[in-house]
Image 1: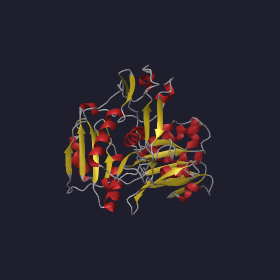
Image 2: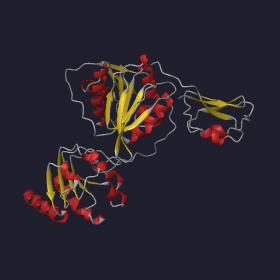
Image 3: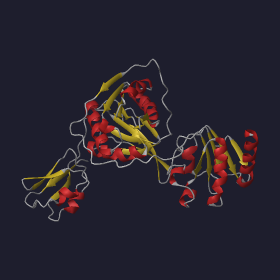
Image 4: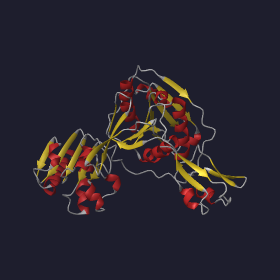
Length: 395
């Protein structure tokens, strides 16, 4: 359902309140009257609230049906940080390749940043048929305005049926902006994607706190947009003989940037999403200081400490260490669950770990159904023994 923001000229006094209120800078005064730039208006309605004269009106137009035959192929947006391709990109290429093959269409990858042209062939070897490179110093740091301008430019150039982005913090912030500009639907944090015989993207994601899995379809609008949760898809394998097309794109002339980056704060320590070994604590932990025990075990193994939701809700561990649907999805080589019963939302965030070791006093705990090795017992007895043995081995 498309909408229109209209200026009622006989009521507009040219006071400029709407100009100041618009968060997207889409309103200007022309000959004393408010004028809307429809190409950037997000239909957020903030200006309507700011107008004391009632001179702005948001109306819904009649339902418009896209000519879906104009849209072909799958497009994924590569994500890079400080000159390094984020691994979510390879997961997007894996699922994007599967969808494109099923549709019998091309997979296009959009690569954005400064001095990123050198990564294009690597993305082809990971499955892309075509890589669109937007290389400019203004794109060095991830920012919503210029990146949204570039991605919208790529979509208009290629007209993909499906547009996929990473379910990272940046992707979650950027994707809604792009969806609003393209006036299409968006499903966030998908854990499963498929296409039906009509080319509709079947999008699966958790709902109601992870208690059910919802299936969402955008039948009328294109492109069909989704962000994909990190670590739920496989990574695309490299084919050294694969060839594709690399296109160096012109930067849009109207590139906007309303954000000035004063300082970039880089998180210290290893990210839990990228850790190969995780020692996680749950409801069986009696006190916040008891996490020192898990930290000692994790340090001996060269891993990091994670936590279940109830522990984070108590304030015992930071949100960045939470594993589960409402936290991080992880896929380490080794996951040691200490005092974690195995709620649906927690299991969804770690069940794809290569090896799961569960320690719990309750023999009927659900976590044991997913563990390769299960230890029924008190973690306060078992973990110290594990630490003792590891220290002896390291001597």
